Image (cartoon, rainbow, N blue to C red; front, side):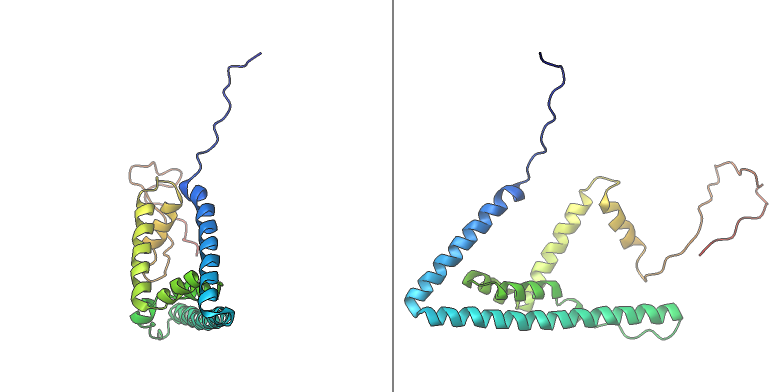
Length: 197
């Protein structure tokens, strides 16, 4: 006995979910193969020294990037507190520090800490400021392109609203009065309720 209802279709699997596990497996196999080639050519102690050196350098890079991120965060809080109190606003961090792409610096440190020669090479590339800057601009353009293609009413609208109303960080409370709407109980000349903070 069959019913007229069709079974629900499973959502289509994205390409990233399909190819990401295969890419990670290929990367692991390539890393192990490359480590064995280097160990055969230069010796096991050389490979061990490379792995330990990469881990130490990665930890130092991540520590430096973490301190810079904390320093930027605390200066932002100080600026917000000074602006809220109406006092003198401390100087903003220089543009060169903002363009340094601290997230990519942390990613470079993480890649250096992961055992493997390919991840170490990618981490060393991310230590170059021009590479970080180029990757940052590319990532920003990709995010903006995806957000502009998103349908209305999605999370993209919330980010767009936050971007519009955030030039100085202040929010102005108010009410919208439509001229074509009926005035209701109070007349046009009647008192309006006060704005609440």
